Amino acid sequence: MINKKLVDTITNDNKNTTVELIVEQAENHLFGRNGYPIDYKHTLELLQRVIHSSHHLGAYAVLGFCHEFGFGTVKNFQLAEQYYITAVSDRQDGDDDERVSMAISRLAFLRKYGRPGVCIDRTETQKWESIIQAGGKRSIAWIYRAATQYKCPASQYCLGVCYHDGIAVEKNEKTAYAWYRKSAEQGNCRGQGILGYCYGEGFGVDKDEAEAMRWYRLAANQGETVAIYNIGYCYEDGIGVKKNMTEAVRWYRIAAQQDNAFAQNSLGYCYEDGIGVEQNHTLAAFWYGRSANQGYPWAQCNLGYCYQNGIGVPKDASTSVEWYRKAALQGHARAQHNLGFCYQNGIGLEKDQAEALKWFRQSADQGNIFAFHSLGYCYQNGVGIQVNEKEAVYWYMLSAGHNHAPAQLSLGYCYRNGIGVDKNEIEAVKWFKLSAEQGNPVAQNSLGFCFEEGMGVTKSSKRAAYWYMQAARQNNAWAQCNLGFCYQNGIGVKVNPTKAVYWYRKAAQQNHARAQDKLALHVQGGLGARQNLELAFNLFQRAADQNHVAAQFHLANCYEKGLGCAVDLRQATYWFEKAAMAGCRSSHERLRRLLVRVCLLAPDSLPSVTTMNEHDLLSNGFIMGHSAPAA
Image (tube, rainbow, N blue to C red; front, side, top):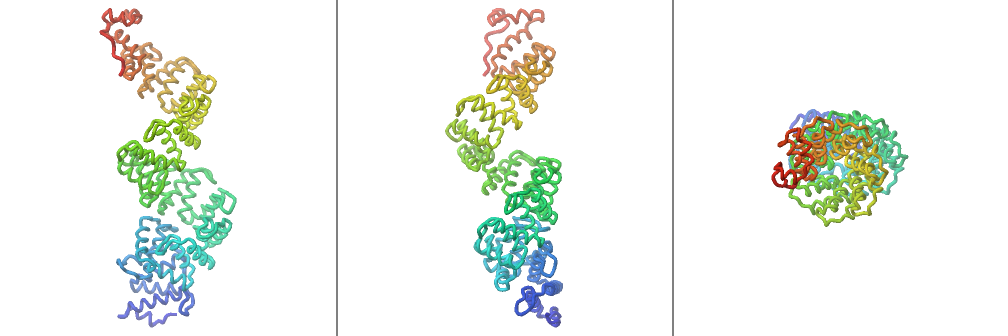
């Protein structure tokens, strides 16, 4: 026990010296050094006396360490964080106080990995780690001495983390494992939990999944939430145990309810996808939110996606961007890509192609395959940068090489159309097929077209219909229309007007203009469906409004003949003219005749005019010269 007289001298002139002696005495009891017994409660009492009488930064640092690891008190990560922050608050550049450096290293850890109630901030982590790296081994001298000389299990764990992450020392997996092992064998739950990780991942030691689970369970029995989370992860992936999603959710929930951010995020995606639990988007967003508010970048990105798409929360693009940005600023690659996508398309903020490109690049620098593909798109289409088709192919190839289906599709288009590469239909089919086999509906439709036309592959109507069907079942409107055409004309399947109408209707409901026109023809003629002239007219109108040329011709025909609408020759003229200007030769011919009827003839003379040929119309002065064909 420290001498009472020594404590009383804190108010005297030798205050700084005396305070330092008290802090050293507290450490004597913390580590059981210099002949003193370990007495954690007395350690806390001494440190509390110091901070109540002075602003000794080292005392705050050691108090933080005690609260982080539960020495003489219940573990309290939030309080530990506060003490660490106080310890570093008055630090000046060049200060080399070992205890303060210890506080910086622990703050770097907590900001990087988080702990219940402590917010992750990878940007702040970089600031603290840079200070530690600049100081080298001196920055972890307090931890190193406590681990090596005093055999402190918490410090052994901390030293293992330094070797694990390469903080102030060269990264060394085997050395990290050795220190974790020393900590774990002394019963430290953090050491036990991370030792389980080493065995599970083969980090510094031969992989042994059963041994991983043994150490995880030892740590979990002491309430270590990361170990509890990892047990859930093992059940999810079948690591050392039989895969069991129900059991995974149970462990995730235990950790999540104790504010483990990783587990909260995992519980969120279990609810989102209905994995091991009944699907519930509201609860998914709830758990993502709990984790995101603790700064976990994956959860922030997932919550942003929920707000972007209205999953469990009201759709809110601006809030989506806020969460993407939070994660992106922490270096989360997928969030960086998603934020770039928002800038590219004006989702939740104003379009900014330069910003889009910036975030795509940051994401791509981390190897994100979605960003590779998006960069390819930017180079192909001049989004935020000058068009460079060869560079586009480079990025598409990089993404496609990682088996990213959309990039494989884009690469197929490049080969089919000679964009950035020599035109090569066989190579195009290869990439379409790779994408299609992963279930990409656009690629499936494109592959079907190749088989239908014999483009880069032996022509096969049956294979064409097969791939159209695969895409159509995924609600791809073009494939549905193409499949309807197959049933209408017996391409790879037996002619079946009813099925043709079924698939045309599916595509038409998605406002697919070609399908609307085809469906209208069937409904107008009563082919595979009950005849309904009014419905046919409405479908022609919808397709024509989308500038579908055939529909414009058919709509004009309706107006001319009163099919599903009142006869209106001026409207007929208007739509024939639009179609003719788009290159429809049938409309060009019909327009020439109709102009005479509308402008020059009385209604009772219409029948005679409609029977005139071009020579008759010219010789009777109804038209002057020949109409120019559509350009």
